[in-house]
Image (cartoon, rainbow, N blue to C red; front, side, top):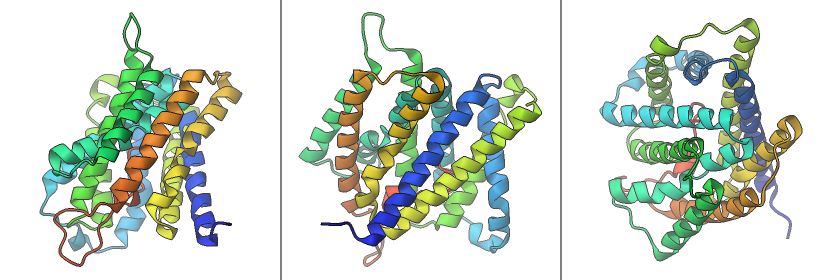
Length: 309
């Protein structure tokens, strides 16, 4: 039975978004050979904020008042931490593995939601989490010498991304998307300024162009992702989100001759399977604290142009 046109169009935009994210990863890999990670993250946030300022300027500033500044701070700190970890992993391990470790976020979301929001974890989700962690172990390949530190940093990026998504779920109870976007852009840019005290390096004109490309690809990728999610249920679109691993593997093979190992393939199958199970359950669970009769937002549907990508 053919898929409805709306699902095909939505899937196209999701895949396009993941291609843009993978292309962003290539840009990060190239510029990270010359610039410190802290400089790359700072300009990613600065240019992202600059791209969004015209959008903010057309709206009333009164709508930016918030009663939950602490939650905005938690969301921003988690998002920026995920960005530092993700960019560092891209610069030091195979591109496909870095993309996959970032996509472990759905595995950690139920655990964080359980500890913070007291959301129940069903037996099915526990099984999915076990499956996902098996995939993580295969990717990390712990041996006599332990796990590679870079891989652990990449995994931490997935944990911080999960925390950011759970915080967005909490914020969405009372905060509109514009306010969430504004405070993340502002706080993330401010936070990423401080590491420049010990790691500043002036980009060359070529490096400056790579930095602009990173911000543009990230913003366009989020816009494509948001367009796709607005046309179809997030739970139906979840499988398309893992195309970034495929694109990462292709880029890594074509540009840097990175091999596609059996560990990557098997680990990807387990993590993707676990992520799909968790995403479907998460998208169907009601958000807590909403007023009766309000639709419950889903984390996967609240993607903004300045998420940790």
